[in-house]
Length: 432
Image (tube, rainbow, N blue to C red; front, side, top):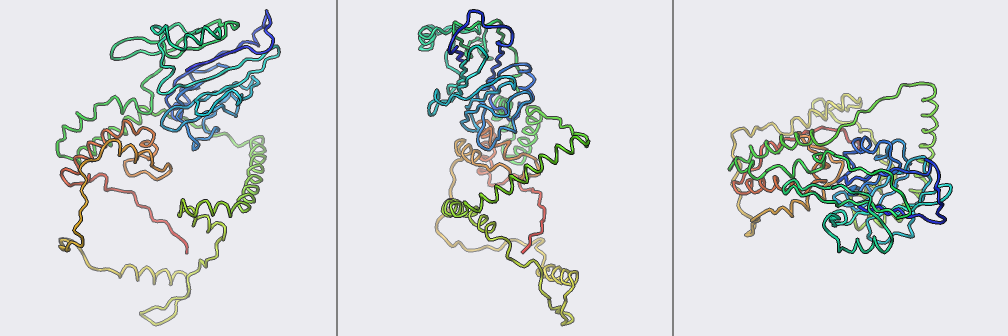
C-alpha cells in the first residue's frame, strides 16, 4: 500500500493550528464485506481510512459498507470479489474531490484532493498486485521505489515492521506511507490486528487433506465432517452485527414519510425510464440471457392471463362445480389419484443401452472446482447445511481443497454423499 501526500499551491511556513492536521489509517483488509464493524473499531477517530484488498465488485453497493461519520460517497477502485481493490473513507468534516486526471487504466489506486483554507493536499492510495509494493524497505535499498523517493523528495514515516512471517519469524516493512518532505508527520504507529479474521484464513490454514484422508472410503463421513467443520469456521471467522430497532416517535415518523415520498418518486421515475429503454433492453437480452429476456417481456406486456379457474365437471355426479372450494377439492382428488402404486421393494428395470458412448471422468481438478465456485449466483437459497453460495464463492482457493478430496472419493467408490441429497423443499403457489 502506498500513500502519496503532496502539497499543492502555496506552502506556508506556519501551516496553521489543529484544523490543518489529518490522521490517516491504512489496513490491508483482504475483504471488507465481513469486517466492517472490526474496521470501524480500529479506525475510530481517523480523518481518512484507506483500505487495500477491499475485495468488492458491482454487487456491493457503497451504502452497504458505509461507516458513520464519513462521507456517503466512497472513493472506490474495485477489481472483483476475489482480490485486489482500493477503498477510501473520508471524514464528513473534510472537503475532497476525486482526481480522475491522475489515474490510469488498470491501476488499482485512488487519487483525491483535500481542500484546506490555506492549501491543498493530494493523497493516493495504491495496491500493487500480488501484494502491497512487494518491497521490503528493511532490506531492499536498490529498488525503483527508492529511486522514486529520492527523485520526488518523499520520505517513509513507517519505521516498524508491518508483516511477520509466521514460519520463518522474519519481519518485513511492506506497507510504507510516503509523504512529501514538506509535510510533517507528528506520530506514526503500527497496530496489532487479528489476522485470523479473514475470509479464508481459517479454511486455508486447516489441514483438510490429512483430516479427510483418515475417512478412507467413507464419503458420507467426509461430507458430514466438512459441513460441520466449515460451519464452525464460519461462525468463528465471520463477525456478527447487532441491529437496533428505532422507536416510533413523531420525529422518526416524519423522517420516514419524507424518505418514503422520495423512494416513491424514484420508483415512478425508474418505471418511466424502464419503458423508454425497453426495446434496447430486449435486444440486449435476446441473445445473451433467454431467461432474463422472457422475464422482461412479461414485465413489458403486463399480466394478461386470467387467474380464475373455469367451472369443472365432477366425474362422480356429472354435475358442474362452480364454487372455489368445490373446484379445489376436485383438483386435489384428481392429483392424489393419479398414481396409487407403491415402489417399495421394487428394483429398477434393466434398461438397454441406447448409445455406445459413455461418460468417463478421470479426475476433477481443483482449478475446475474454483471455476465453478466463482460462477455461483449470489442470492440462491442454501440447503439444510446452511452453507450459502456467498460463503463458497468468495473463498474458492481454500474451499476447493476439501471439495476435491470428497469428489475424488465419490467418483472412486461410485457413491454420492447422503447428507448432500437432503434438501429443504417449500411449495409455493404459482398463479396462471
